[in-house]
Length: 126
Image 1 (tube, rainbow, N blue to C red):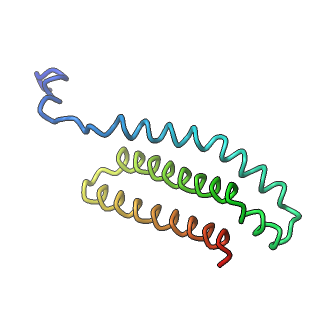
Image 2 (tube, one colour):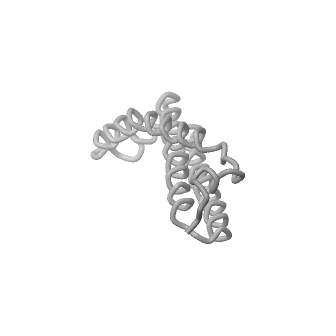
Protein backbone atom coordinates (compact mmCIF):
# COMPACT_ATOMS: atom_id res chain seq x y z
CA UNK A 1 0.00 0.00 0.00
CA UNK A 2 1.33 3.39 -0.98
CA UNK A 3 0.65 6.59 0.89
CA UNK A 4 1.27 8.65 -2.25
CA UNK A 5 -1.65 10.29 -4.00
CA UNK A 6 -2.42 9.44 -7.64
CA UNK A 7 -0.96 12.81 -8.65
CA UNK A 8 2.22 12.06 -6.72
CA UNK A 9 2.62 8.71 -8.44
CA UNK A 10 2.51 10.21 -11.93
CA UNK A 11 4.39 13.43 -11.22
CA UNK A 12 7.77 13.41 -12.88
CA UNK A 13 6.86 10.80 -15.46
CA UNK A 14 6.27 13.46 -18.09
CA UNK A 15 3.69 13.48 -20.81
CA UNK A 16 3.87 11.64 -24.09
CA UNK A 17 2.86 14.84 -25.94
CA UNK A 18 1.76 12.71 -28.88
CA UNK A 19 -1.60 11.47 -27.72
CA UNK A 20 -3.58 14.37 -29.11
CA UNK A 21 -1.89 14.21 -32.52
CA UNK A 22 -2.39 10.45 -32.69
CA UNK A 23 -6.05 10.78 -31.69
CA UNK A 24 -6.73 13.52 -34.26
CA UNK A 25 -4.91 11.64 -37.04
CA UNK A 26 -6.95 8.52 -36.38
CA UNK A 27 -10.23 10.45 -36.33
CA UNK A 28 -9.43 12.41 -39.50
CA UNK A 29 -8.44 9.30 -41.42
CA UNK A 30 -11.63 7.60 -40.20
CA UNK A 31 -13.70 10.52 -41.48
CA UNK A 32 -11.84 10.45 -44.81
CA UNK A 33 -12.36 6.70 -45.11
CA UNK A 34 -16.15 6.94 -44.85
CA UNK A 35 -16.84 8.51 -48.28
CA UNK A 36 -13.80 6.87 -49.86
CA UNK A 37 -14.92 3.41 -48.71
CA UNK A 38 -18.47 3.96 -49.94
CA UNK A 39 -17.12 5.09 -53.32
CA UNK A 40 -14.70 2.15 -53.53
CA UNK A 41 -17.32 -0.46 -52.60
CA UNK A 42 -19.85 0.98 -55.07
CA UNK A 43 -17.17 0.95 -57.78
CA UNK A 44 -16.30 -2.67 -57.00
CA UNK A 45 -19.94 -3.72 -57.16
CA UNK A 46 -20.34 -2.03 -60.56
CA UNK A 47 -17.20 -3.77 -61.88
CA UNK A 48 -18.18 -7.35 -61.07
CA UNK A 49 -19.04 -8.14 -64.69
CA UNK A 50 -16.41 -5.95 -66.36
CA UNK A 51 -13.34 -7.25 -68.12
CA UNK A 52 -9.74 -6.46 -67.23
CA UNK A 53 -9.31 -3.92 -70.03
CA UNK A 54 -12.42 -2.01 -68.94
CA UNK A 55 -11.29 -1.88 -65.31
CA UNK A 56 -7.77 -0.70 -66.21
CA UNK A 57 -9.24 1.95 -68.52
CA UNK A 58 -11.43 3.11 -65.62
CA UNK A 59 -8.38 3.22 -63.32
CA UNK A 60 -6.42 5.29 -65.84
CA UNK A 61 -8.69 8.24 -65.19
CA UNK A 62 -6.76 10.85 -63.15
CA UNK A 63 -9.70 11.40 -60.79
CA UNK A 64 -10.17 7.69 -60.14
CA UNK A 65 -6.44 7.14 -59.62
CA UNK A 66 -6.26 10.11 -57.24
CA UNK A 67 -9.18 8.77 -55.23
CA UNK A 68 -7.63 5.30 -55.14
CA UNK A 69 -4.31 6.69 -53.90
CA UNK A 70 -6.11 8.75 -51.27
CA UNK A 71 -8.07 5.67 -50.20
CA UNK A 72 -4.92 3.53 -49.98
CA UNK A 73 -2.98 6.14 -48.00
CA UNK A 74 -5.86 6.76 -45.58
CA UNK A 75 -6.53 3.05 -45.15
CA UNK A 76 -2.96 2.01 -44.37
CA UNK A 77 -2.25 5.04 -42.17
CA UNK A 78 -5.47 4.51 -40.20
CA UNK A 79 -4.70 0.81 -39.79
CA UNK A 80 -1.17 1.57 -38.62
CA UNK A 81 -2.45 4.03 -36.04
CA UNK A 82 -5.04 1.59 -34.73
CA UNK A 83 -2.73 -1.42 -34.47
CA UNK A 84 -0.08 0.76 -32.82
CA UNK A 85 -2.52 1.64 -30.05
CA UNK A 86 -3.29 -2.04 -29.52
CA UNK A 87 0.43 -2.86 -29.31
CA UNK A 88 1.08 0.01 -26.89
CA UNK A 89 -1.81 -1.06 -24.67
CA UNK A 90 -1.35 -4.83 -24.59
CA UNK A 91 2.36 -5.63 -25.07
CA UNK A 92 4.08 -5.54 -21.68
CA UNK A 93 7.75 -5.88 -22.65
CA UNK A 94 9.20 -2.54 -23.74
CA UNK A 95 11.68 -4.17 -26.13
CA UNK A 96 8.97 -6.28 -27.76
CA UNK A 97 6.66 -3.26 -27.89
CA UNK A 98 9.27 -1.10 -29.63
CA UNK A 99 10.22 -3.86 -32.05
CA UNK A 100 6.58 -4.57 -32.87
CA UNK A 101 5.82 -0.91 -33.53
CA UNK A 102 8.86 -0.53 -35.79
CA UNK A 103 7.94 -3.71 -37.70
CA UNK A 104 4.34 -2.54 -37.99
CA UNK A 105 5.40 0.81 -39.45
CA UNK A 106 7.68 -0.85 -42.01
CA UNK A 107 5.04 -3.40 -43.04
CA UNK A 108 2.34 -0.75 -43.44
CA UNK A 109 4.71 1.56 -45.33
CA UNK A 110 5.78 -1.24 -47.68
CA UNK A 111 2.22 -2.46 -48.31
CA UNK A 112 0.93 1.09 -48.85
CA UNK A 113 3.75 2.01 -51.21
CA UNK A 114 3.33 -1.24 -53.16
CA UNK A 115 -0.38 -0.52 -53.56
CA UNK A 116 0.19 3.08 -54.64
CA UNK A 117 2.90 2.02 -57.11
CA UNK A 118 0.47 -0.53 -58.59
CA UNK A 119 -2.13 2.21 -59.12
CA UNK A 120 0.49 4.52 -60.65
CA UNK A 121 1.67 1.76 -63.01
CA UNK A 122 -1.86 1.28 -64.26
CA UNK A 123 -2.38 5.05 -64.54
CA UNK A 124 0.79 5.48 -66.59
CA UNK A 125 0.14 2.35 -68.64
CA UNK A 126 3.36 0.60 -67.64
